[in-house]
Length: 124
Ligand SMILES: [Cu+2]
Image (cartoon, rainbow, N blue to C red; front, side, top):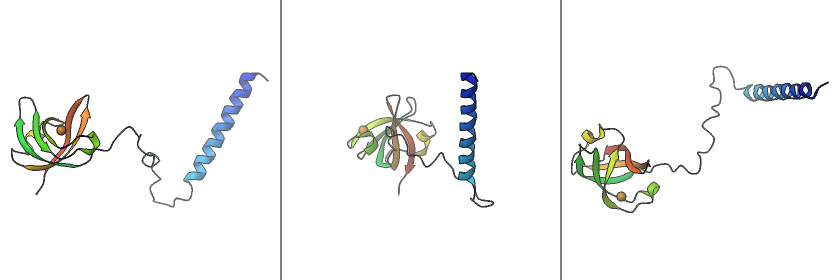
C-alpha cells in the first residue's frame, strides 16, 4: 500500500468520525425545533468593543459635511470623556432625524479613523 493510499484512508476515516459526531450531536432535538445555531454562542473577538448607548445634545448639524456636533457624555467604548465635538454619520438620513437642541442617545464607533454615529435617536 502506498503512503498516499493510507493518507486517503485516514482522511476518509476521520471524515466518517466527524460526520458521526455531528449526527449524534444533532439527534434528539425533537421534531419541529430549530437546530442549535452554532454561530452565535461563540464569544465575540476580544478586540471588538460593543458600542455603548451614550447621551448627548445636538449642537449643530452640517448637511454639506454630513456632520452632527454633539455635546456628549463619556463614551465608554471609545474611551472618550464628555465633550462637544462633530461626528460623521453612517446614514445621511440621520441628519434629518434631529435638530439643534434635541436630546439624543447615540452609539458611536471609530470607522477608518473617523468617529461615526451608527445609531441616533431622540430621548424624552
Ligand atoms: Cu468626543
